[in-house]
Image (cartoon, rainbow, N blue to C red; front, side):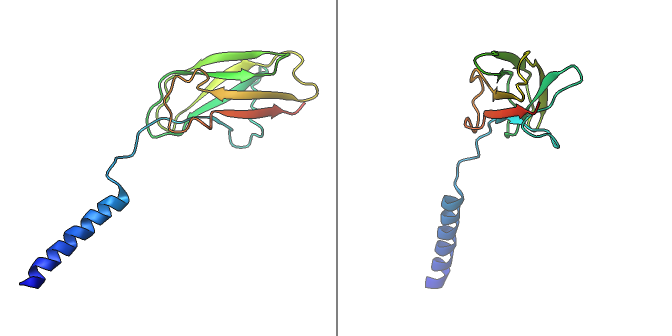
Length: 137
């Protein structure tokens, strides 16, 4: 009789321990916007045929991202631009075009890209929103 009671108690104890180890809280579903560097491009430098900087914003999170803004800063002398980014599904990437200011290539053109520039989106990672870019002149 002792064995019949002890076995279920041990099994229940193991199950409770397993739940405690794996955790009972479900994973949080949040977007995570990042500047994306297209395959084959270096330094986030993607320039279209009209001379615009093409910025790629990706939602690498596990929930959709509402609309937001992306900022490209060419430095204190050349200024910055802010443009809207549409709603992004999980895994989706949007492209946003920015004019490259005259005089940026001296000889290279450096810039900073910041996604979710107005902090509108509650993201799973707020630390990966800004990157430095450079286009060689």
